[in-house]
Image (tube, rainbow, N blue to C red; front, side):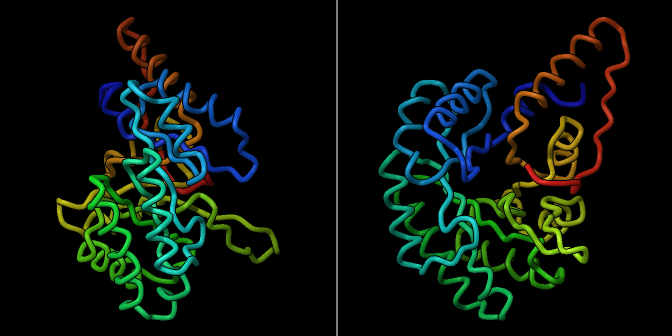
Length: 257
């Protein structure tokens, strides 16, 4: 296999963000995350305290979304939401930029907004990922500008998507691409080595996870965690038995996570 189990499992932020998520779903998801030894769970703010209790001693981090999913909260609300999440045990924060301000070109506002959260996060010894929601961004210039802004503001990661950035299609339906090879390459090229890149949305299988790593991504939001890592074990066993493992490193951007 191209990468070890620990290298790939250590990329996964197991996503527990669906609007219908119940307390039982949260508990089951945390148990799954611990079983597969992933990097973290990514959860809603109200669930941070319970997730921290469930994952204590497992090595799985608690990550929490802020201003999710559209980034529309005022800056002080995002900062305070961050403070509460960190108090409750979150050690990673996934915040969403103010999408309307970014689209409108008010990049000073966007930078202040991101910096307020980054400063709060770092004051508490945690780390922050900043979500662009690339499906809403009309061109690469805005994405590059956001990369530059986030690095100046102190982001530890830049992140492609929320997984919920649905855009109205020509046929009237709503869909999205999420993480794409193009965007991951673009974002990796436009931040320095001290800023990491996270993929989210559209990575549903092991080949997609491998492709994220190939493109320089260090984290990946996923709900298909068990399927990905069970497939890794299957291929690993086949390789040891001298059979084709089927490691293809497939394409991204086919749907949401």
